[in-house]
Length: 145
Image (tube, rainbow, N blue to C red; front, side, top):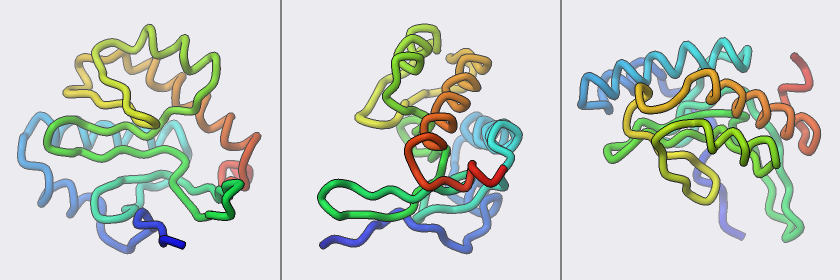
């Protein structure tokens, strides 16, 4: 069975942002997201894999038997867009997406060019909905909060 590539690392989050993110706007957005996600989740930022900044963790196990740990919420300041890992497939989340602003949706992540193009209070609601979903369906560090 394949191993999970996205695992917690000891890399420094701010060092990653300062060395990896080239555009000043994306760097500023990344620092703002770190502050917001720290506040919303109650967890300190940690690096997951080489490019994901995550907050908290949960354990998942699929019917196939594959299991692992992942951040409760997170983001990656990729070159094309910021990838937001804050989405759980719930009715409320689908409704919130309609109010979020300018973004593209992947299978499980939201791609935004700039934070100024989305509604931050709606993003907060998406985060809170995702944390609630994970709390209910997985072994989650959010239970310990």
